[in-house]
Length: 343
Image (cartoon, rainbow, N blue to C red; front, top):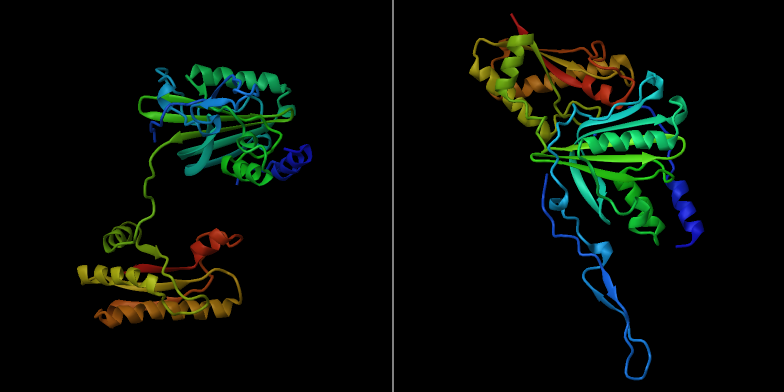
């Protein structure tokens, strides 16, 4: 691969450091390529070399070859920052569940689970790269970690700049100048992957504790609404409407159907339906829109057989936010319909 191509790839891969804003299976054993010496043909010329086994680039990583560690693991994320680092000198990313790739042998392996990454500059610790690496390598060894990668993200496809960039994104290596080492701590019931990356200015560690996905978002059911109303007196619903309109989209109808079930289940229950918006646009328009949306919900409930004296609809616009309107996530939380229990 031309030197200038590698340089281009490393420039593209080099990203600035930013502050914090996330199943064990057995594969076939490694089958490294072995080449026997070429022999001469009848005319005295050298015959083509004979290759036995699968090419090294296609050899599959055998997790069963990694010894099981019998040592106790410290609490997640297992590795701490060096002592003395202030809050502004530690950069952390974490996710309760995420999916990314690590390199095992000479191949990418997708892993999923709890993820936490740490980054810091060496000049903030007065440590050399060698000292920092040695500290982490010793800690990983104490946990029973075994180095499992034979190449770096660049080394997976050294002749293709596009592949180098793609592999760096999959492995989330933040800077092409960083070294890249993958360690596996294999417990009887747990796989822990530790990625150690370093250069002469910073250290990056990433820990992935493999675990199955657990559903954390659910349909809002009548029973869930009843429980929330009993404990808090109100429940927030995120019913989908057409943008800047009061028309309830088809995927918003199931939530309204659950409100109907709630009211049928408890004939004494009376509700105020509150419409809320974010603060984008004119406040008067937002209040009118929120009233129209609350009325739309009430209209469907009435059409479903709920008597009118059990319901009331009011539009509050952007007057009662539950989150910061400075970003999309907060604004999405503020665009809601709330059911409030009437006494």
